Image (tube, rainbow, N blue to C red):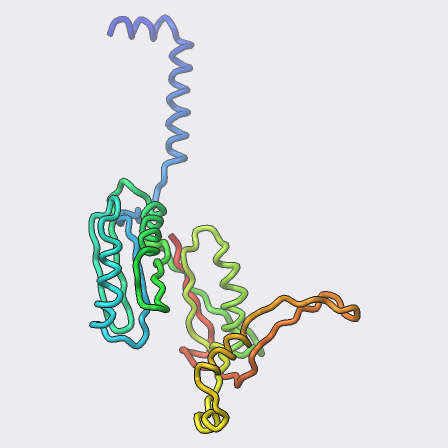
Length: 250
């Protein structure tokens, strides 16, 4: 103790430099310290969602939920698995310990999902990377002399695409207005008279909606051919006549 006091008295310049170093380190630590009004204390979780339209909960449980539980069991650092099944929907919540991050957990789940055998046409998906305390920003898209269908199309094809490129945005949910759709009305009587099966109609619609590359002609430049299927355009109401969206952030 006497040596320390003697050093402080005999080496004032050294003590001043040491004090400045400590002050600078403290300021730097304070500036880099993450301070949040509502800190995220939730566990590392991955949610697997599978849509099974038109199936009863018992069928979804046997064909989807149980195979997924078996395939996802035993993941590294997994501490808990919760599953829920209802009409046309199956979702499983996997909870991991604090030794892993969200990206490692999602990568492990994706690798296991590739080996799970499910009925044809079913594709499990992971829920967006967000927590229950994530920020939600709501906005409304409106315009003069613009129909509700055009507003929803602008939201889905333009606004949504640019918002997803914003750092920190985890998911965007759009609702309201009208969605532009093309419907094909089938006449069973005429199909029978022409000898056309339903599968042929489905195959023809699939080929008609495919995109193919085209070439340019000498008379026009930059022309691209795209084959589309003609049908009756209809708009179905989802909610109000305005387009609403909700953005969830991590």
